[in-house]
Image (cartoon, rainbow, N blue to C red; front, top):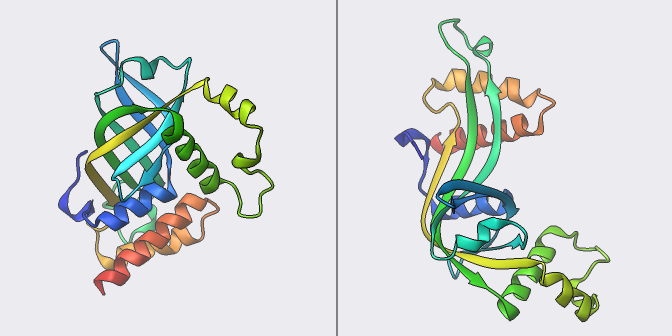
Length: 204
């Protein structure tokens, strides 16, 4: 990923936080000699430095992904930035965003390791007071359903983080942008405003 130095996220914990908050990823690999992508949730295990997920068995991506070096992209908030918000008209539109790229090698998983990742996934996404508990579902039903998926893990070899938050503009201009974004009806725009404020706070 192209990352100018002032947009780079070097702190590993911040990178992990972005992954965990934006865990519905895009996973790229080579399939039959061509780029192939699947959109799917990936669960991070920080201690093992692995990402866990599963494909639907009819998805052909899994058939030749073993031992490939792959790329998983985690998209954080993003929004359009209008030059009309600046103090000058000598400017052009841009886009602010937060993203993390993870590179690593794929290994297939099954049995207990796969079931553990499914439990972790349900626990992550279900509300704490949800009536759905994976361990309470009939085991033969779960066993039948797992035959329709293929589990995998990605051993993380490299992480790149980028937060393009108008850091290349003067502080007063960044503050103008924040003010406009905070007034937006877009949740992503308001999240970018929050990220920009936090970035300014750290530099003050």
